[in-house]
Image 1 (cartoon, rainbow, N blue to C red):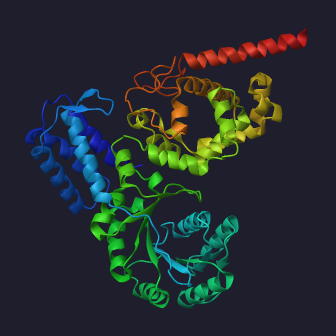
Image 2 (image 1 turned 180 degrees about the vertical axis):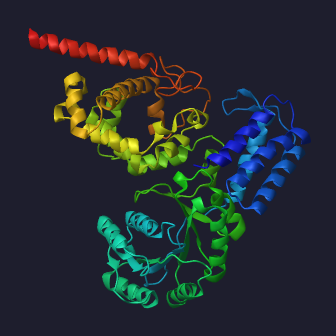
Image 3 (image 1 turned 180 degrees about the horizontal axis):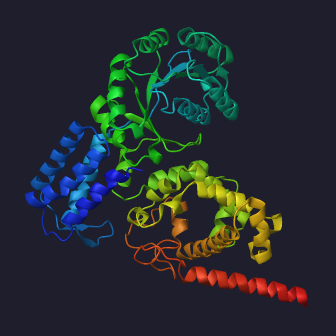
Length: 508
């Protein structure tokens, strides 16, 4: 996510490395990289100019303190490059905020009306479902109105989402969207629903007939919230379109979708500044849980490579099964988990978003991600892993150490993968089990589960762990290694020893 923007700030920091002070000349060289990355990320040009000018003015005009006092009382040296990044962080937050993620609710007996609008293909129907789930979790009773009568299967898609969420969907075949929305509100009163969500059809701002339809729906129902669902991958074009829509409908705010798969993300930085309307939520995946409150600080942290512990912990709390969490955590941190436990963790990870997005939010992993092959963070790999595990017997899933070469051959045939694929997964599983045991000994995971930031002191969080170069399969300097380090070799040797021991017992 936002790789193009992040790269510019990273290069700017490198240009200032070793500088003893911030001058007009070295600032000029640094902000050039930032300007290029923002433009390549499709940030609106007037926003880029304003941001760059503000950063330059502040950097040259402020006095850089060469020392700072940590809350522990320790004196820390502050470098000019750090000062530059701090200013960039503050200005990024100012650019995207302030933000208010609250919804406006009806103060009368009438249901609250939420109107979802935007271009076709922006993810309105899925986002409507996500918002309905969020409302239901807050003890509201939502009703979905299928007002997109133009896109094939749009009504069926909303009905399927309604069934999954156990939320009623209102639809009358052949009725025009204006009347459908009016009857939908009346139907919500009959059912006792306190929130109505209009899933309207996608349309272009230049389509006067369809835009007039939206205006009529607004006039008839006086919605409390109007959200423009914006595909962040479109970039600057989406911002221009949003401005046209806003002039006709006067939005409450925006919901940005597909931000987990976008390397540009220009809309995230442009849309608030251009329209003056806040970003309310971020769509960070396809799952119905994947709707986050927009936090400018968190997004600025991720752009600058600091990670986002708060967002990570919020997602973790949202998807974790509280009934089994303590038991699962103890097994993982003791390095005793099985393939069944492994599958449960895969399902939890999928609910939290893409693998790359997950690691971006872990402090200290920003620079490392560039050195990890893209295929290593391919989300489809999770499904391949599940297919292999599901081809195992119950005993093999519960007791991974019983797996031997003949079992690997059978598992490979069962899932349609090669023996090498199965063996590689088995080796990675053993490595992960060892790594988690070491994390448990280091105390880092317990800190994260308690909401603390184990990276707060800086440095390498894995530095005290034997055989760990910062990430499984990555060497001390970040280069990808074939062996994965001594921890992996030790784990494999231990597994083979157990297998031989098991065979000897059977013979005796």
